[in-house]
Image 1 (cartoon, rainbow, N blue to C red):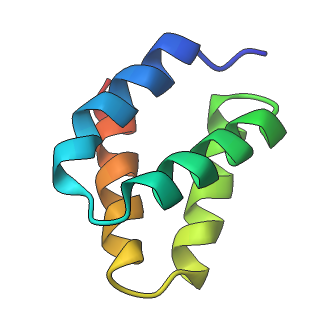
Image 2 (image 1 turned 180 degrees about the vertical axis):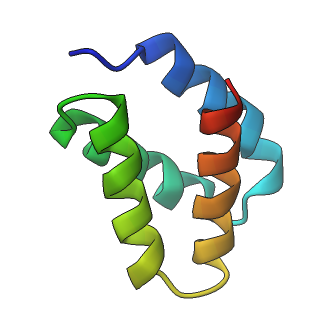
Length: 71
């Protein structure tokens, strides 16, 4: 897979202190990671989930996306 697994792990590590629903976020991120064809597709899948999510989980997703994109 073209997506860098180290980047995924680092983003999860950096987001963990700031998210409310850690286990839910981690499970969703890993599920989408396995579905994604590349990094761009992974972010697209995350953003689709973001549109459907409700607070406070929506904020957790935003935090993860921000951490992932910053790496």
